[in-house]
Length: 189
Image (cartoon, rainbow, N blue to C red):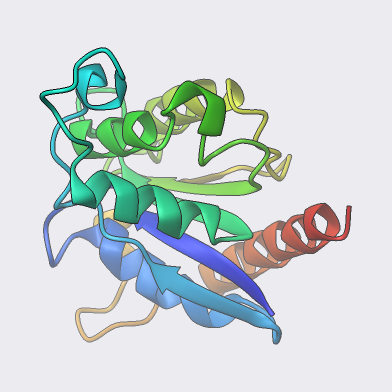
C-alpha cells in the first residue's frame, strides 16, 4: 500500500482547490491510500523553533505532526490556487515548516505532483512554477509533461460535485496515473 499526502493550498473550506482535490482522489489506482494533510493549523515558520541555541523555544506540536505526516507518506499531491501570481502564503509556510530541521527534511526525495488552478486562463501557471522552484531544492521527482494548469476553474465543477467535462476527467485521471507510477517507481528503489 502506498500513502499519498494531499495538501490543499487554500484554507477556505469551500475552496475550488479543495473541491478539485476531492474529485481527483478516486483517480488513484488500487494499492493507494490518500490522506488529507491540513496546513491551516501551522504557525508561521520561525527558525528559532529549530535552533538548538534558542533553548527557550520548543518546536510547536503542529510542526512535528505535519513533518511526521509528510515523512510517513510515499508521495505528496499539491492542489493549489494562485494568489497574486504565486503560491498562497499558507502553502509556502507549509513548505518551509517541512524543510527543517536542515538535516532531517521531510520533503527530501519525496515524489510530488502539482495541480494548479485559477479562474483566469493561465490556470495557476505562476503558482505552479513558484511551487516547483521551492520544491526543486529537495530533489523531489515530479511527473513531466503535460503539467496541470486548470484555467477557468470556477466553471470546471458542477455545484453538487463532479467535473463538467469528460476531457477534464480524462486529463486529470491520466496525470494521477502518471504520478502514482512515479510514486511506485520511487518506492521500489
